Amino acid sequence: MNTRSAYLAGIAWSSIFGFSFLVTKAALSAFSPLELLALRFGLAAASLLALTAAGVVKPVFRGKPRGILALVCLFQPVLYFAAETYGVRRTSTSTAGLILGALPAAVAALSVPMLREKLSRVRTTGLILSVAGVSLVAAAGGGGGADHPVGVVLVLSALVSAAFYNVFSRRASRFYGPVEITLARMVSGAAFFGLAALVERLLASPGGSGALSPRAAGAAAWGAVAYLGILSSVVAFFLVNLSLSRLKAAQASVFGALTPLIALAAGELLRGEPVGPAKGLGAAAILAGLWITNAPDPNPVPGGTKLVPPPRDEATGA
Image (cartoon, rainbow, N blue to C red; front, top):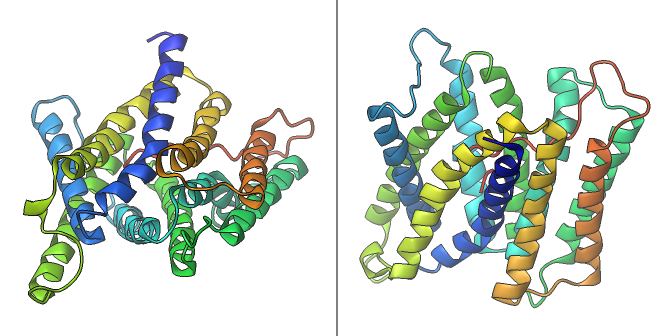
């Protein structure tokens, strides 16, 4: 694959993740959050297991530590996607996308105490800018009551969960490859959310309010499930790895920064979500923070790190 194809792959996966918030919002009009997650991960797990059976991917789990893999699966998919999906239901598309777009900053901040990595003054400045941007976006709201405080807290919780996932994923990568980690996450997500959705259905009162029955969902809702389960969870995973195989980490980070921009544009253009001055300023601060931390550092710190957006080998995550 040449460099041009790598750039096209990067644009493709950043677009898939950027639109995933909008698609999730649409799917939640037909399914409850637990039903959507069960269907999404069930489809993703089935797809990856089919690829495994066909020999396209060859995961190996035997003889490897299971504890670190269990921690990875706990933080993502279980905690992250539960918080993200319930949060997206009560926030605007742009708010969720912008807050979660600051994931690299959260990962870098967490890597200092947990992985003993170091940040130079330039990287620290970028981190502070990203945090300030998230704070502005969270405080600005979506306009017209689109952002409920509980929804914002849930999206912020998803951000924290994703940061812990990325730290533990780095540790797990000593023993497991990307395919193995992704397969474990998809299967564990299908099992956990499938059971949770079943319990939810069994406990639901007849005639109670809530999402529609899956039988009543239309083609658009099922298309959203297919988008999340196949495009966001399987196709994007391969696109991420294709782009990273040919591009430097700093180059790949540009595409990660595109994701919140795409989410912001999708929310405004397709859902009519207003972007006020405060949210616009917050978005600029987040992107400036990502840009600064990935620019050449004139005074690098030995053992330091950049705030490169970790590849959302999901499903990033969204």
